[in-house]
Length: 331
Image (cartoon, rainbow, N blue to C red):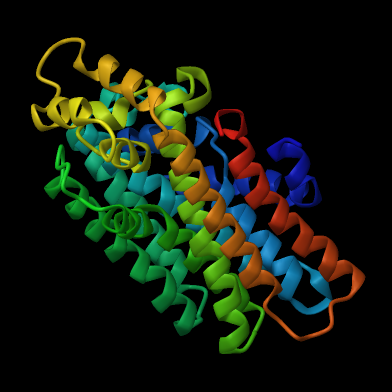
């Protein structure tokens, strides 16, 4: 089953979201406007807003998506895109989502300003939701982004980092926004704190699984599917789950990374070593654990479920299974 098939029940909502994003981030200055247009024309998975929509269908009155849910979905995608713009500058990525990155088209300065502008726009729209709990929940994500980026920057080519530390960093950089998006959607549906926690945990574990799988694809995927060059993380010294698991068995890989891949072919050699050992399979198993944790969080309720809610819950489960199936052939 494809992502498009899974999201078929929110197809119209996703179409409206894509149309609204460009108008929401319009800037008076032509350069900023061009940068924003360039960003949102690139497309993307739109997973975060999809989660907002699906949680809304599960939790809101009459199982419908309100205008507030729609606006939250748009805000989450703007925040996510802003973080990618800054990440691309830091990592000096040439392509993202299959198109040239903003800083490559314009300049680092314009890219940083564009990212800042998007964060500012998202904050303005967030405040206008007039829901303080949602504002607190989503705004915390922006500080988490900074925390994750600092942790990543301070641990480049550091082979002593543990898997648990990698998971913490992945939470800050990826899972925090997904968790907050799901919880924020539940908040807008006026769910109690206990029910909000269910959706927060679902988003957290889906986010961690998503990041782990993305890191696996950075080793065994293709430039076309990833939208960026294979091995980018490793070349930048950003070590991931497949690397950490392989380091337990390969002193050669440890030596190459400790030497910061100083020779021309060291990156390719390292990727081959990772594929040779069980690091990929162990990383895939870890992603599966988080998918199952996400599903367990959804089902951890004693309340009766009707047909409609069961259908929408099933869609959230399908998302988790789809994430892992992207690399099922390697396990």
